[in-house]
Image (cartoon, rainbow, N blue to C red; front, side, top):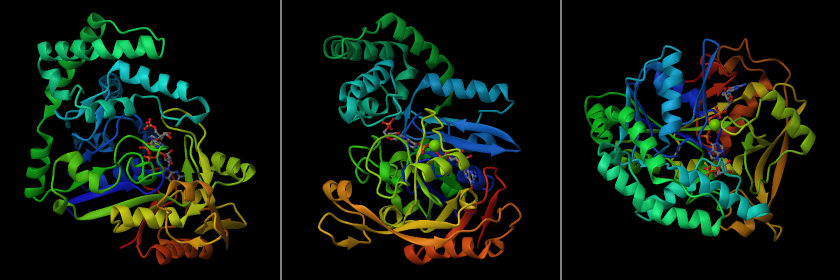
Length: 424
Ligand code: GDP
Ligand code: IMO
Ligand code: MG
């Protein structure tokens, strides 16, 4: 299928990187459409691990890899990743960066950290990579874009204009050191010299690829419940991970998208603060954290594990128009006598609902209605198809399909590229 969106159906870290890498084998172009180095996408090939924060996961397979206009780009992180890949013998020749993507500047990172410290107990728990402040400047129309790297004079002018305001904030509001124009301009001119050759009209590039019948993957970062409009605001990121945003984030029409593959863990995790109805009790959560190695790819923070939340997933199917699902990390559940799944939410007035609450006060105070399902103990390593799964594991997958009315196309049985069962 020519254009497929791969979207996180939960709170991020669903295993998107692995699924994108797998599908990239049969694709021509892989595009990131939003987010920045707050992402951490893990790809494991032949025992070698890659963790992509800024680059599209297709780069490891030598595919044309696009950072779309909807992304925010930290040049230091990007160049660091490019250098690391080069050291590992992987070419980054296929990289193309939209001139309309916005740059993360050093003050964005400083302001992200300062604002979190100021919020104290109310903090969002951001990755502190400057994501929120960079998107805020984009919306305020005072951002600096990748295309500004093409002209040293314009770049310096824009940095000077930005600093005139940002330094006031840093010094007077947050009592932090100001940034020096010469230092920042010099540093970004250096980045510019290295990145210029990768700047391209990526909207046109993707359009041409689709017209030529090539296969294009649109790789989401974060996840549906972290979406700025539809997620658990304010505990969200500052972009739109939902599939509809792939069209604006790349610069193609929505009618060009053929398929939307939602990626969900067989349970759920959340990193950072915010309400979480199906969160596991501490001892069970600790066990899943160890079994699934649930630690943040970017920040190393402990992820909070929860039981599979069908209410959240039903919402993700609706918001993204998910046409099929990848259910990852089923192997992690292979040691439980019994499993739980969240089938409905119980609202503060005692009523129960299968639908995600539209208002935050309902969501903040709802309880997960959990159902108990039989577990299984057999490892999944020897399964070569979904039909080979232990009966309880197969029933678990089929239950998800029945509840969501969407086929589970891929089942993850381990972190390596090959450890996946495909259906259909
Ligand atoms: P992403 O941000 O959605 O790309 O996900 P992350 O890479 O942050 O986190 C997913 C983690 O689970 C990574 O460490 C992957 O290597 C790992 N992983 C992905 N799929 C599977 C799976 O099916 N089984 C197991 N055990 N690990 C998996
Ligand atoms: P991938 O692409 C999980 C979370 C942060 C915080 C909130 C806002 O690897 O799935 P931000 O730095 O974006 O302003 O932080 O969003 N968050 C993620 N959680 N996976 C991610 O990316 C995330 N990117 C941001 O923990 O709660
Ligand atoms: Mg991640």
